Image (tube, rainbow, N blue to C red; front, side, top):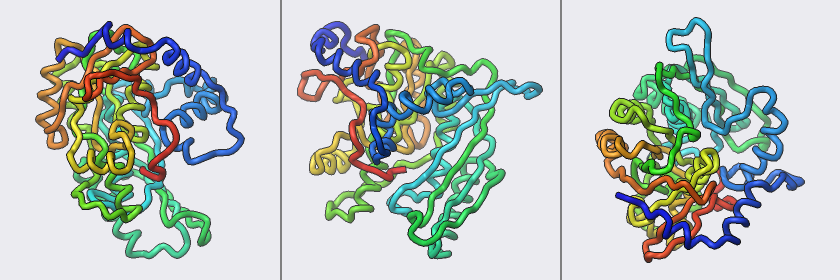
Length: 366
């Protein structure tokens, strides 16, 4: 598959490019935290770029990746990946998963996208007074099952209880450590024009499944979260395509936001073809009814890979060999420009800028 190059770029109006460039440089002017600051979209990036990175950058927090890769003296591989995350999903249980398995899978996937083999996780509970012990037991059992199936140890943890009304039943915080093999160096900075964009499967399943469960909407659809660990898929891709540039799991903000993050980090353009993006029919129908774009909906078991063109076919075969990758597809290509932008060739044959998520149509999604 060859994505369009200059013709598509030429259709982007210069004013549109300037408008998006200005937004990416906008300082943090918000006086209060809103739900949008947790969406993973534009407001989240303004918070990170306008406050967190400028304040903590001198302490080493300088790269916007899901995991930090650190050199450790005396370690056989020499490097470890370290990540942390928090889970506040509502409801606690949803079709295809729950907050417990989601916490395990999400932490593993942040390590996997750094090319790390997950080793162990920490687990901290914040419990609201009055939470039913039966609910907590179900979540703990789900965590144990998910960790065992993934081959990852829960190494340490913590439990805190807050008074009734001071939380929403149950929150989980995790951290994870993984080992990075010699020669593995994944980063959006590695991306080059001509690279292919691969997507491991259908988008939007998790976000729509959680939303339908939360809102109890009377939509007849069999939609389940795609929550799953991806470290084995990543290992298979790296074995088949060792020159893979980088990975990204498109969680909050969806595929559109993840692609924009990678384009901005690499200083390149990315073009994808909407017709090649796999979407389950029920998810597409639900999004059309609710006025949502599947490319902005969260996923918890999908992977974006940017791969050198001569290894794209092998990487795709490796994706499809994994249980979670049977619908994998090559959906686009990296361009030299316009820089920091993602372009979408629409199903109707036109083209438009595919921007980051604005606002937060689905809060408390992970």
